[in-house]
Image: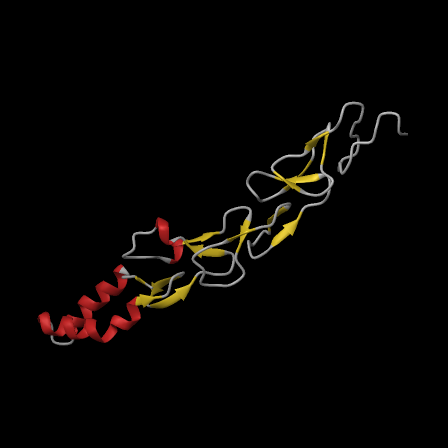
Length: 163
């Protein structure tokens, strides 16, 4: 577990300690009374209570100052990854030939004749002179000498003599 302390919670503690008798003892007793609230699970942030990032987003703990996390620290999964559940601290890789769905909660397959763009967010048609018998990552295969591609989606390179 990561101990997360939220600035707003600390300000509330200070105000409450002054209200409940002030001084060091009032502050200490109040902190002891709410310490369980400030302990959140990995993938959660503190906003009056522990809350989880939505599906398709994760709490990037490696980029955070470990003493605080905010709802804005929930990041969309990077392209080529996804997460189905809420409260995740990581995203999972899509399979080869798949891109991230719009909401990053699933992966979507590209078609034969396409490849997954470098950003992992879209399927692109193979350029002329290349093909993909199945969806590929990053680039398509070169056609052999004496063959070509002429269709928008290029799953194969027929020979030039083929009508």
